[in-house]
Length: 166
Image (cartoon, rainbow, N blue to C red; front, side, top):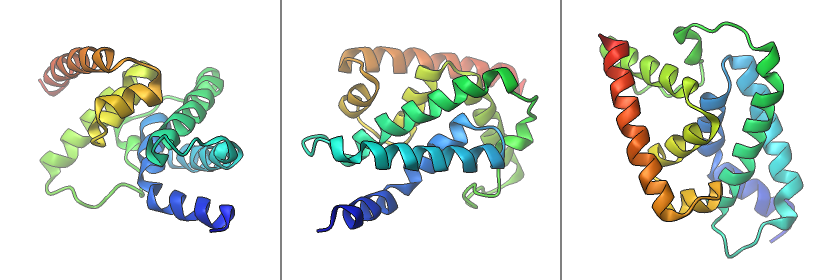
């Protein structure tokens, strides 16, 4: 298969990963679009170095998260105030069942935006169903460190959610 075609096919198959990362690391629809473009560019540039022994999705997370964190760091000085309602753009999946669910989702995204970069990436990958080995590989952590950090992070988020919802 042609490498360009293979890359395009793999990117299309795993496009949801990019959208999840963009929602977790960008605050407005315009910023998400810019981040999506930057992640795709970085993936294209890095594609020749992808080692086939590593699953594409794990490699994709690593490259896309690095691009997202890099863009976030460069934009931090120019960061605008954002309201929780701005965190859900038109590209959000239309699977929210009720206003109460919508409020919970907004609260979760608000809390995720407040997490340090590594914790946000870890939580995002865990919510996506990635196992500890894949998360560790993408983020440069041991499997046991992933488990420990994830458990602590879940506890911290649950407490923050209770405080936010009170």
